[in-house]
Image 1: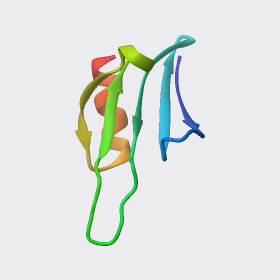
Image 2: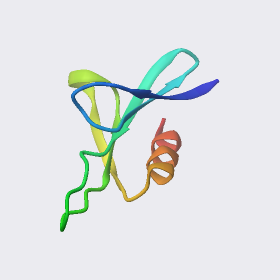
Image 3: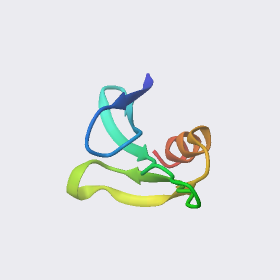
Image 4: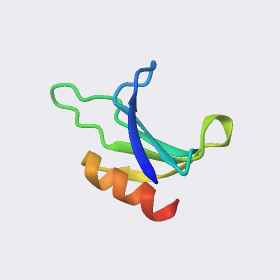
Length: 70
């Protein structure tokens, strides 16, 4: 079973992917400001072992990408 959980940390807009009780990776958006649009960052792994997979402009796209490489 896979679940997406929003997590409150110092990283804004962080969403954690868990599959079968194992934390797989996360995606987050550092936020945007006027004149600056930031993409969602997608990471496989947790902590020091996290590896950047890529970027996406929408949260649903970011989730699909992480699920496809998990």
